[in-house]
Length: 283
Image (cartoon, rainbow, N blue to C red; front, side, top):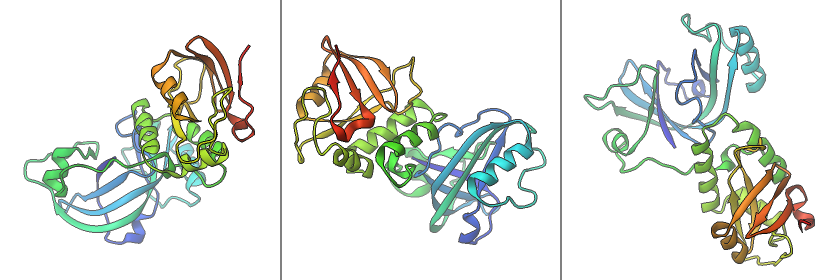
């Protein structure tokens, strides 16, 4: 996704690499939508122009009880002290913090269209009309994937990290991230297939199809699960279609386990043992 934020900026690309933040009394937008990988344009308030195109590299969001507590958490997360005057004088003493870092992509000079009113909160979503009128393109980019927020290393710990990191992100945004991840040949998709040796994870199958296996998404169940991502399974085309169109009922779901029934047949899949083929049909 793409966003525009309005700030008073310097012209230095290096200055953009510092930690940026908003302190709000309530969970204002885009507290629960901004994620690593999103494109963020910077509107210079005095010049009334977009002056930078950047990509979000990290996001931290959390409630805070005091500004001192917020400062300590931000400095620990980003590994650098905040500059003097980091919080606006009128920032609430307690509330919600949205902190983020970016990397510069391109310096721009795109004047704000006449008649466009920037929201008081200082954030604007780039939709098709904004993309055409201000950015000179027909549609906004929508290519952010889970890869952008995933740490390097083994894929299952990375998914567990993502489930925690995205816990306060709007469910519809998480679904969009998963969908985009599965639509492209993402690092996570490749890693899951390699971990499973390109074999179907559904109990009793194990068919190995290096060129045809697919990664399916089982959305998170509403109760009994703290896994906001749901489950990502490597499946053969037959079981991929069966889970998509059959009578799937999930009764237990976590980062490590998926239990339920498909068309009346109970099953248990051990996600943590994906490479060891320890899935089984439940009794």
